[in-house]
Image (cartoon, rainbow, N blue to C red; front, side):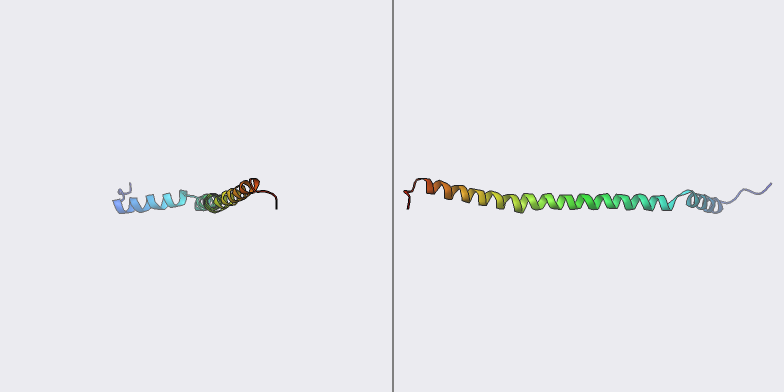
Length: 79
């Protein structure tokens, strides 16, 4: 019978087996697909932010200005 391996040898064997059992390519592909999904979400959030903070206020200001000009011209006599 072989003598029982020391704790260092058993730990080295366990780490070697664990390293071989991991499929690194699958993990990398999973991480890359998650990174792609995150980048899509960042682009979507950026577009929504620009719409809410820039484009919609400018649209409402221009429509409000147009409505005020149109309203003020109604009461004036024709020129």
